[in-house]
Image (cartoon, rainbow, N blue to C red; front, side, top):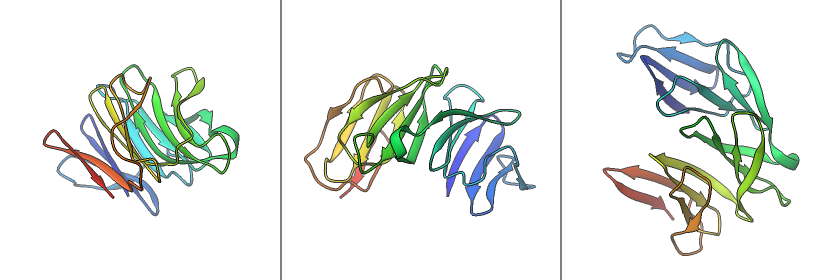
Length: 171
C-alpha cells in the first residue's frame, strides 16, 4: 500500500487500484485514471502533479495517465518519489547495469544518478533524498537527486524513513 496527500485529496494504492477520499477519509472511490498494475504513487512537492509506476513504466497522472518513461533496460521499478521542478526519482532493480537510481525529467529524458546499487526504498524531505539499498547501505542526496553520497556502512538496508528530523534505517 502507498499513500499520497495532494491538495484536498488522499490517494491510496490498494490491491484493487488507486482509491481516493477527502482528508477526513470519507466517501472512498476508485480512481480509474491510474494504469493497471500501479505499484507506487507519489506527487511533485508543492504541486498537484501525480506520478505512478508500474513494474516497467513511469506515468504522469492528470486527466488520464500518460507514460513519461519506460524503465531502463529490462529493469523493474520498485520505488518512486517526485521532486520540486517536476522530476521523478526512480529506484530500479535489475540483473544488469540498469540497476540503481534514475532521474526522470519532466520531458521524459532519464539518466542514472546512482549506479551499481540494488535500491529498495526511497524517502525525501525537502531537497534531501535517502536510498536504502540491498548490500550497499544508505545513500543521500542533498540536491533533489542530482548526486548521491554514501552515508552508512555497506549492508542490507531494507527501509529508510524520516521522523522528527531523524533518519531511520532498518538493517
